[in-house]
Image 1 (cartoon, rainbow, N blue to C red):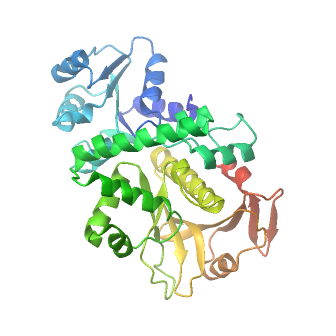
Image 2 (cartoon, rainbow, N blue to C red; image 1 turned 180 degrees about the vertical axis):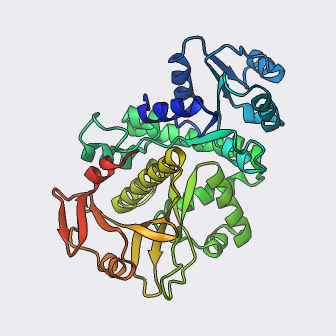
Length: 376
């Protein structure tokens, strides 16, 4: 995939600072970096995993006249931040420098950010309905994302067997290589079992205590392992919003997978996961390219009234979103919270809906068409 939006945004930022490109393993970061290099004749691509390139990186001997330097997997170098900081502070730009690699890059970036003020961060996500615009009608794209997920290889293969084989190898590699580098886990089988249990709990609040009982682990260990899976871009958590909602005391987050194809559940769970991935991609795009402060939450109160997603800006819900497979009648919970919280917009997106309508100020939209309208 060409990823034109990301190419354009990263291209602009490369003229001003270094750019860090992070995201899940095999989501297309290296491909995008190579495309950016190919667009600038004479660019230099260096992969720290390749012996000849590693020597060039260690000696900082890349061509200073190259229009773009791509440093792939450079975070595996222990002192990579200090080295890059020294180059940036003494030489500045040009040359343009793009740093990319596995999901660990973002974690190391947060661990003592000595490069602060010297780079722009861009996060690459799985393919979305909007990004696949023009390849098929939006409704077909959404169906395929629900079935195969948005990682390029399984999505483009369109084959259930190939997607399943890719998924197994993808997870095994993350668990046995990436996670072991970050935080060695001796009981890999139990970690994989945790992933299986999470696959069945997508869209539901997760209890560390309950998972701990199932796995014969302490709640603390379960929480720590989920955090590791989150750092590795296997799952992401959506926390409840409750700052100004009386009696909204539920604290457990919901879990979603970056790979919607990994979800085990009914079509409703897959639809909700696909929407969550598209929303997270959209919000990260707004933050990375516009500096907007926005967060993804859900809302639930003691009476179990619930809205699937809330886009929160300036600590207040700006957009409420309820996700349905076929029910176009407005959710009573959405109606309740829309009245109580008075967000800028309340929306129910329905996969089977064929037309848009507005009922009592709440917009009901075909899910695929609305996802296609997002800017990322």
